[in-house]
Image: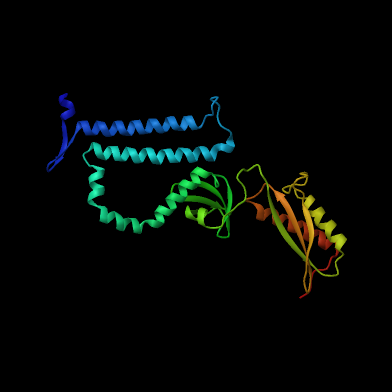
Length: 271
């Protein structure tokens, strides 16, 4: 072997770190980085060499993340072997410690398994608008253990992945091109004319540009919803693409209805 490969960079007791080890570490790192770069290029192209559709972006990212975790795990194991640290010896010598550690990290392991399911199944993808724990937000990032969700207030929630698997999560959409339905309720006095109210609510919804009014499959629906002791309840069900901003769309619709009610002189319920 060439003398340069046997050159000792440093030694600690009986352990010696040589130039060969350093080059081995560099080669493993370089091959891992090149492999990941190749995988990224491959998954971003279909069989004809064209870029995949934008709707496949979440699935492409999921595949790349799984490949990255696997490749770097193997790379780290190889690097440890190169510098003389044998994984099998470590595992055999610390079996009892690993059992105790395994019991302590069960929640973390559960989150990791949940993250793998999320990345493989694609039930929740980057860009989806979710309702979790009563809060609505858009998925910004899906990692192996946690995910980041941007709320309507501009705050970032870091959620453990098991929440998306074991708890009830309302996914408003998988694709931004699909609208979602929302509802508001309006309470007025029993003296209000039902025909006027139904026409008023329909006209108010039709005046809102963020509400779909020309889609025959997603028509705005106005209903006489309920009788109560001091009032009657009407419900407006509408469709919109503004999922993350749905509260603002609901507010605009309420303002339009309020204005129409005042102009028509329709009485509100009395306390």
